[in-house]
Length: 134
Image 1 (cartoon, helix red, strand yellow):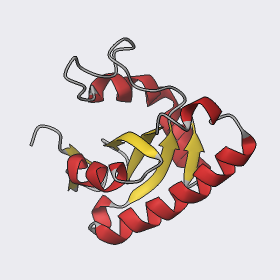
Image 2: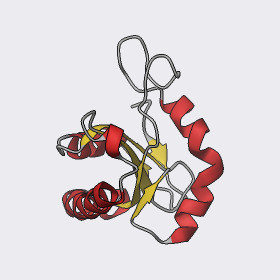
Image 3: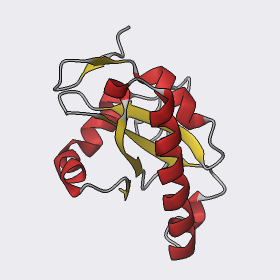
């Protein structure tokens, strides 16, 4: 209940069920769904551990971008209209206990992650892109 957030359209979104749909993808290690005060929700994902060392390789980026576009469509087909994701962002760095993004029990620290990307959100929403790289 405490994780619910309200979009600018006045609808409440529960991020955990949407994150569960995203987290089953083999390229995704973990995700966060946010969008408090925005017209639509978004997701940020950390790539699977085996992909992260190569995430700056253009060929891998193209493959991941295409896979995330498909994932976005799949997720949006399974959730209510007001829960549709506007875009997916691929995180530049993994979330760890050491960088303050995970708790000692490996749960995501939503507020820390959201604070770390807050300055870029308006630009991401304005871009119109479906998959972005942080």
